[in-house]
Amino acid sequence: MSTLITNIAELMTQDADHRVLKNAAVVIEGERIAWLGAAADAPAADGAVDAGGRALLPGWVDSHTHLIFAGDRTAEFEARMAGESYSAGGIAVTTGATRSTSDFDLTRLAMGRVAEAVSQGTTYLETKTGYGLDVENEARSARIASTVADEVTYLGAHLVPDGLDPEEYTDLVCGPMLAAVRPYVRWADVFCERGAFTEDQSRRVLKACKEAGLGLRVHGNQLGVGPGVQLAVEFGAASVDHVNFLSASDVDSLASSWTGWDAADGVGSVGGVGGVGGKRGTVATCLPACDLSTRQPLAPGRELLDAGAQLALASNCNPGTSYTSSMAFCVTTAVLQMRLSVHEAVRAATYGGALALGRESGNDADGERAVGSIAVGHRADLHLLNAPSATHLAYRPGIPLTHAVWRAGVRAR
Image 1 (cartoon, rainbow, N blue to C red):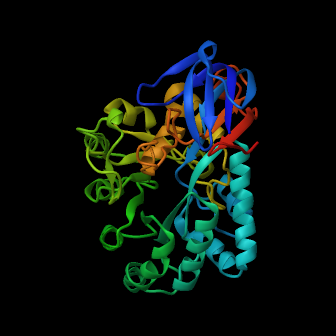
Image 2 (cartoon, rainbow, N blue to C red):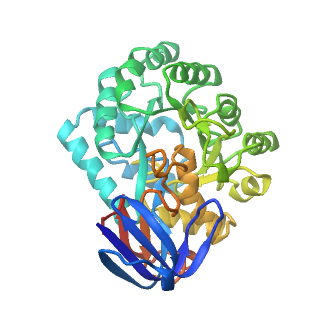
C-alpha cells in the first residue's frame, strides 16, 4: 500500500544535503519513504493526502528521556521556583514511588507519556532506567521500557541510594545489576556530576558497560565544569548530555571527535553499536527545557555548532527537572534563546537525535532504516505542521502546530 502526500509548501528533509524543497510531495510505501520531489513530478500511489500547503518535517527524535517513573515532584519544582538550588537528590523521591508501583501501572504511565510525545510529532524516542536503583527494580524498569520505547538506556548509575556505600553501589552497577538489565538495553549511561558519581566511579561504569557490548552515553557538565565531556569523548560515547558548563577544551574535544567523519557516507560506528567504517564522535545533546526548569545557564549550542561539534536537542522528560515531552518547545527555545537558526534547531531535534542514537543511517540495502531525515529508503517518520514553514515553530511560540504524524508509515495522528 502506497500513499502520496502532496501539496507540501515546504519539505525540510534534514538529509545529508540539507535540502529544503518547495511545492513538494512524498510517497510512503509500507514503513519506508519510496519517493520525494516536486509535486508536479509525483508518481501515482494507492492513496493520497493533500497537505494543504503545509510544511513537512522528519518526526522529532527525542534521544534523552526518563519515562519509567511514578510519583509527583511538584513541591520540589515550587521550591526551586522560590529560589532553592537544584541538586541531584530529588531523584530519591521518584525512586521510592517507582519501586512501590505495579508493573501494570508503570507500563500504563509510560505508554501515556509516549502517546503524548507522538501526538506532538515525536516519532522515535529513547528512555532510561534509573528510578529503580536496585537489581530487581532496574531490571523491571528496563523490561518495561523495552516494550514502550524505541531505544532503552541503562542508568543504574543515576544516584547512589541513601544508606549505601558509593563504592559498593558502583560495584553493583557494574556487576549484578548490569547483568540483569543487559537483555533489554542497547545503551548505558552515568550521571557524572557532583552529588552523583565521581570521575573514577563513572570511569568504572563506562568501562564495564562497554565491555558488556553496550553503547555509551554520559550525563555531564550540568551543574558545573567537570570531567563528563572528556570521559565521554575518551570512551567514544555516542553523546554527552546537558553540557551547560563547558571549558574551551571541552568544546574543542567535542568538535575534534568528529574529525574525518562525513555525513554523506552514511556509515560509522558508535560505542560498539551501529555500522562500520568512517569516524564519528560524541554528540553534544542540549536539554533546554531542563535548563529553564532548573534555572541553569542554557547550554552553549551556538558555540558548539560554530566550533564544528554535532548537536542534538532532546526533551529530558522526567518528573523532577523537565516534565515535558514537547520537542517543539525545545526547538523554539533553541531559536529564541540559544541563537540557533530554525533549520539548525530542527536538524538538532531530528537528525541530531538520530545521530546521538546511532540511527542516522540505513536504507533499503541494509534493512536498518534511518530515522531523523526524509530520504528514499529511510523510515517514514513524518511530522506535518499546521503552518506553511518550519519558521512558525519559533515565530508562533507556544502554539500547537502539529497537524498530522506518521510513524513508520502509519498515521499516528
